[in-house]
Length: 380
Ligand SMILES: Cc1ncc(COP(=O)(O)O)c(C=O)c1O
Image (tube, rainbow, N blue to C red; front, side, top):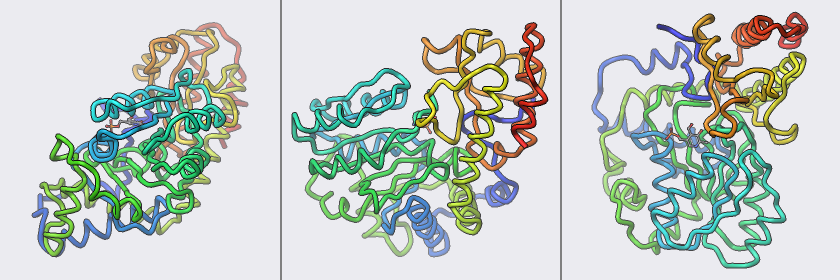
């Protein structure tokens, strides 16, 4: 069964990206592929607002990049995790596997990050690093990484972020904001098939990495990757076999992104998010997250108890062949569903109209009177 994917990742890819992805396996080494790998890494850095050449494309998923931060940088060091959602919890889980000196500033799931609370914690103890999620996909919250990066700098800490659900969707200025490490992946904003964890590290951090202890993990020790970058640079600047098709797809996707302009892409997401929120409110529902903290690549809709959210997720799949996301958190399960608008395809008006039409039809079928025409018009 073919569904229209309106989930918050993975997303469907544009035809050009699928064309780049298709085709026979090629060798993952040799001048031609080595050049593509390095150019793609540099494109990735640019899209994240950095001049660093240290972008690593790692076979795996976004969590491969998170694990690498854990193994290489958290390793036996003082870490502070900012946690306000399912994926914030994951950072804590990863960090505590590599260090027994991990604290967290814990907020309620979906509660906005209070900078004063973060700063108070930074005053209490000297941390080596601060790590937080940019967009927590579980609730659709956009966290203030620019402000927390600045606090981290003030207290002389490294700053890392999980930008898996925000890359190519939200503004990220890695160099300007003083971010030391960004973990992301191929399958959300970059609209590629899953298969690559992406890790971008600041030039500043690469200079100090040698002084860090060796972790128990080999694969997730970034120093191994850096050694290969130096030692085998002319033909194989990475330690493992790469999924060449996914790298080719990512190269194409980043090329398209840069050609069209990253600013244009970000404004598409802002505009779609605004229209969708308006439409949802016209139907008498609301967003789960308060106004100024809503992410722009997905919307977590609060049914306000008007209907059972999982029932609608099943309805839209069965009757409209559209997949949307349910809630990840048990507490929200009955009242929240999530609509993805992370890719250009998901942002197309006709696809958003299909989701809102299905929602209106569903609500009407439950004897609710809703201004469906108006809700659809607000998407145009
Ligand atoms: C914010 C965030 N962090 C981490 C992950 C995990 O990424 P992956 O499943 O690619 O390992 C996801 C996946 O949805 C995510 O949205």
